[in-house]
Amino acid sequence: MTRQLARLVVFAVLVLSSRLAAADTAYDTVDAAEERPFASIIITGIVAGQGTPTTTTYSLAGVSSTSGIDPAARCDRMVLLAMSKPGKFQLVMVPVPGVSGFDCKLVVRTP
Image 1 (cartoon, rainbow, N blue to C red):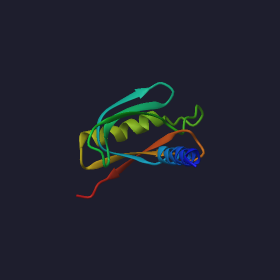
Image 2: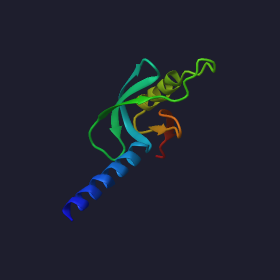
Image 3: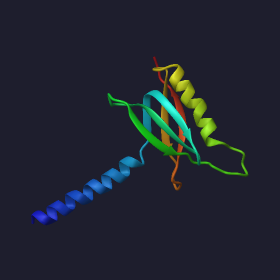
Image 4: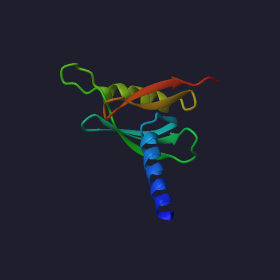
């Protein structure tokens, strides 16, 4: 009986953690950002609802050699805005469905 309960708890944790990993991540403040090769970016900042800064690496979606779109450069501009006016903007990293990558979104916070 206890083994079955333990298996159920482990299964529930795995299922919930995989769903949480696919959720949007909103940063109230962005302290640092570093562009990495292969369209990835490292962001250090305070995630909404938390009190201490965290550092996370994101692979950016939308990489295409033919489209001319540079997702890292586009995301950098949003990061700079979020860093330049803390409290006015919220940087949100949004997972792209069907792709193992993220898009950046900048949200204006209401005063």
